[in-house]
Length: 459
Ligand code: FCB
Image (cartoon, rainbow, N blue to C red):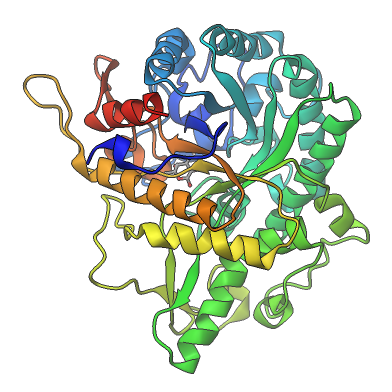
């Protein structure tokens, strides 16, 4: 599969790679960093596969220069990373910790020196533990604290960072963290998870306001949502209705307020048994729907929704993600090591759905897309990952087709530059273009890295 066979992308298209702080940095007790909900969650027995934690991760905190050298060699025009809030405000409030800001300032300078545009995500899930102790995203105060934090980081780095993403995947922070409990803080709630989703969006709006108020001019501000195109598993009325519920849960809870200035139709019918939505205030839709310069889109696989009985009939035990749906993808689709179905056309459908559903949509940057496979280090110290190459090839062709069809996609960031701490699944799941041999911390570019480098070089 020669990378050069992929049709040309528009001039100026941004090629990138992405990571996130807790997944790569390690050094959790250095530089004055406070504790985050992921430190706490990872220390609880049974929460993370094999008991892995982010304590050392890829040791990027100490090796960031080597990692920027890898990015430079890869030839990317931009690098998406996240700032760890507890490095900047160890307790989630109060004055900035200069050592924390200094780390990201050095990283940004290193990137600029390598000719790489920094794309900064303010929140990739590592909430300061002190804020969780005060209610976390269930309470509105966390949204206010987030805006304060955004203002601090923006004031320190916006002279050199042109791309700003407030939140990464509020779906995961709210519904996986507060309803499913598979992610930190590990709660299993109905109302609390819906409140978290709302307060994350309010925090986004407040952060955009705070940054606009002190903007230098050229910065682009946006948010990254993870969305899936949803298809009913069959044409049975029950599955068609299940697909509508899944589209509401996965996508519209976020995209309708952000992009259309409304709360999604059907939410009251779905969730009134578990929530009275009392966390909402007048004016919140205006706050959430601030004009954006970019929409970050993360996508890994499409959803095929099948009706399934709810797990808990008693509303008191219902979590917000229990919407009577199970995933039933076509059996012929292959799966990654995550068990996720591989269907590049699903990304194409999602891009067209966004365009058709939300007129006036800001330009889209695909801020994550990639795959996990069982990569192995060969005796000659190479890593051949044909599955990942095929995945990238298929998805980039789907993006290219969607652009030809009029969808305004401006960039693509591969997840991920490095193998890293894959949250509840720990280090066993590898997503990197670069293999990390954790005991030695050696970085070994996989064949997908060389493929992606050829692709970028050929543009
Ligand atoms: C996304 C996360 C990212 C990574 C990928 C595989 O949901 O944003 O940190 O874990 O999935």
